[in-house]
Amino acid sequence: MRFFIQTLGCKINQYESQSLRESWTARGWSEADSPALATLVLVHTCAVTSGAVADSRGAVRRMGREAPEAAILVAGCAAQVEPEMFRPLPGVAAVVPQAAKPGLARWPEPCEAAPSRAWPEFSIGGFKRSRPVLKVQDGCSHGCTYCIVPRARGGARSRPFGPIQREAEALFAAGHREVVLSGINLGQFATEGGGDFWDMLAALERGLAPRWAGRARLRLSSLDPGMLGPKALDVLAGSSMTCPHLHLSMQSASASVLAAMGRAHYGAEEVLRFLDELRGVWPVAALGADLLTGFPGEDDAAFRQTLDFMARAGLSYAHVFPFSRRPGTVAAKAPGQLSLDVKKARAAALRAEAARLEEAFADRLASLPRLEVALEKADPPGGLCEYYVECRVENIPEGFEPPGLLAVRPLDEGEGGALRVEPLREPTEPLYAPGESR
Image 1 (cartoon, rainbow, N blue to C red):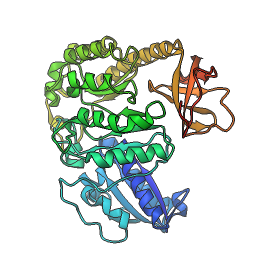
Image 2: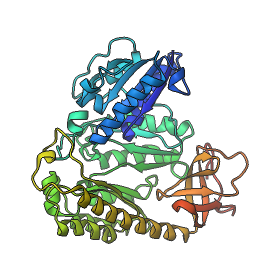
Image 3: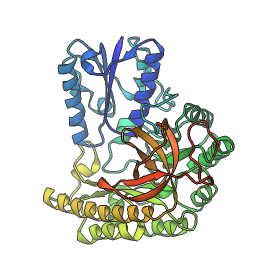
Image 4: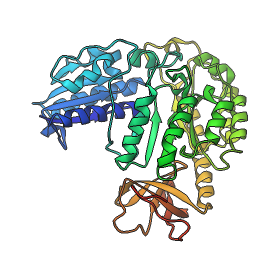
C-alpha cells in the first residue's frame, strides 16, 4: 500500500495526519511522493470558513484527477459538517466523521465512532517538520457566534497529563528541539485533578526541565485572552523552557463587538494590564494576535479601538481576517452586515499596522546580543528564533543540519523581514545541537 496525505487547516490537523502517517508506516505501508503514485489518498479537510470548505472540496476533486485509481478518504472538519458535499466526488471511498477518524489507522477495517467525550486515539513519535505540534486539547464548548468549530470538533476534552509528558520526551529524544503545545481551545483544558492549562504547563516544566532546559524548548499555541491572569504570570515567570512568545485569540478590542461575538469574558484593558505585568517577566517578548474585522455591527469607533489596541499592546505581528458569513452560525444572519468594500478596507488598515509593528520588532531583535534559532531548513539554513521571527543563518558550521538549536548573533534585517544571523563562536556562548549539553 502506498499512501499520500493532503492536509488543510490547523496545527491539530497536521498532528492527526502525522499520527496516521506513523500508524500506516508501522504497518509496512510507504508514503508516496505524489498522489499519482498512491493507492490510498487521505484529504484532511478544514471548515473554519466557507472558503476553507471550498478549498477542501477542490482538493478532493484534484486528488480524483491526479490519482484516478486510488481510494480517497475524506476526513476532518469539512467532512464532519458537510459530508454530503464530498460523497459524490470521483474516487471517494469514505467520508469519515471526527469521532471515527482514529479508526483510519486500521483501514480498511470499518471506522467505528468513539464516544463523543473520549480523547481521540492519536499520538506521534516524530514530525515531518522540525518543530512538531503536540496536541493537548481538542474541541470547544464555548460557542462563539461566528464559529463552526463546536459542530466540527465537538465539545472540549483534554489529554491526560502522562501521555503529554511522555510524548514531549519522545519528541525531544528524537532530535526535535522545539515542541508546540496546541489545542482547539487551550482555555478549556482541564487536568485530571481539575487544574487548568497553566497547572499542566507548570507540571510539564517540572518534568522536562531537569534534562532539557537549555537544550530544548516549548512554544505555546493560540491562547484565549481570558486565560491571562496572576497564575499565568507566575507560571511563565517560573518557566525555563517556554519561548517568550504569546499568540492571543483577541479578535477585537471593542467590548460591544466582543459581546456580539459571544466573547465578553475578557476585555482589551484587562489584556493590556496583563501585558504590562508580563514585561516585568519577559522584557523582550513576541506578541501576536488573531484579529477579526468587519463583524456585523462593528462601527468606525469599534474598528478604531482594535486598530489602536495593536500599538498599545505592542504586537509584533497579527493574523487579520475580514469577517465572512459562515453558514450554520449565528453571526451569518445577524443584523448590521457590512459591505465587502468596508471589510476589505479595514482588514488592509490592520495589516498595514501589523507590518509596521513587525518591522519595528525585527529592528529591536537585531540589536540583541544573542538569539536561539530552531533550525528548520538546511538550504539555505534558517528557522525561527525564540521570538517567532524567521532567521537566515550565515556561516553555519559544516555538518550542522536541522533539526537543531543554534545560538546566534543578529547581523541585520534581511529581505522579506527575516533576520540575518550568524553562529556565536565565543567560548562562553557555545553552539549546541541535538544530544549536546550547553
